[in-house]
Length: 305
Image 1 (cartoon, rainbow, N blue to C red):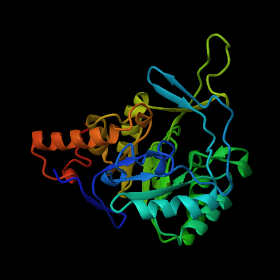
Image 2: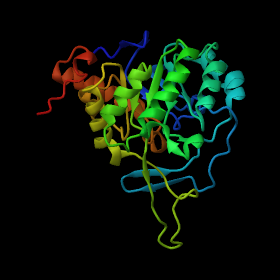
Image 3: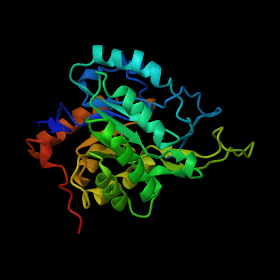
């Protein structure tokens, strides 16, 4: 089965990417897997200033996956520009790189995009819009139509690179939010980000992560992610990256059938960095078994009554 596609004006040799926040800046996984055999990766979120992140513990497992509260810990804009992107530019030849951007204000997003846009080493910006807007009392950008549109519309003039809006799942109508994002200038979508969640340690009776609540990821959110992609695909025609709970080729196929063009593997990397390779080989076997010659035949091919 041909796994390659032309998306965002670039060639993705296969549909499997690494999700932001789970693979660092790529260098951390170099040697564990051959990054250049993947479709690409989304690097750790970049904010204007370095951030230490939330107090530990930051990650806790539960039966259905993981809850994390990292707090967007990252090395900051200057080090990404001076160290991380040059490494990626020198290391990767075929895998595409997405720069994940986060911020507390609209101006934070503009600052990161404006600084990094002229630099080589990446294809597109993936805007993490699940961040709280401190100028709006902490309202999450992608849970309000006006804030979602504002950040995309404001960033749009500062780059000709593709803008991919990564949306929060905890909204009444994810299809509508997808429509708003595209209407404001997004060239693509990543669906979904983590769900908000809370778990307690039964001995201390305190939250299992240091910041209290956190983001839920892993196998438990797979059906919700597939549903979000399906709903968005009914409303928009731009490329969609499916993310959430992918551990196998079968999981990736769920997203493709719902209408995703690409997929991101995230939480599964923590337990087995070889997961992306396994997903790829299983996709290939599915194509041979079913006689599908091109992966594009599967995109949006799910039949919903």
